[in-house]
Length: 203
Image (cartoon, rainbow, N blue to C red; front, side):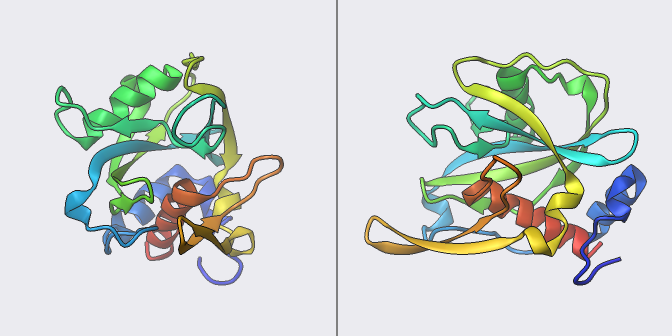
């Protein structure tokens, strides 16, 4: 079911999620910059959808406040593609295990969303996976201040979607935001969540 009421009800079911994601994949490259994709540095993140007993949730991290790039921001586990990685999927899985201690054996890979161009010069591949409990996270204290879950239904409700703009380095920049409680989820992370919303809306 789609429309103004959002996708909150079917999102409780992992079978629905698998089917909707498979049907809705495709589309162009979301972006928050006019950069040439060929000039961007490759990176990848995992979009971890946790299968809980009563609902699905999205697993997110809060970056530590001393990092050079995006300190204290909400993000998905991930990072730049390294030579040792066999693919962006390998990057997403490696970074997830390094950052939050979530092993590959808990992750059911479903595919990827369209690449996302960031204002900091990265071309990010968002890899989508269902995460099967039980699992125990081990956070890298240097990079990750906190890991937390947000009900997927929150992001699938259009009432929680915001669009803002700001001047950055002399240019007007537009960005998505999806605040949840004390967490301000915005920028590339919110943009990739919007990509997931659009995929599921067409599934």
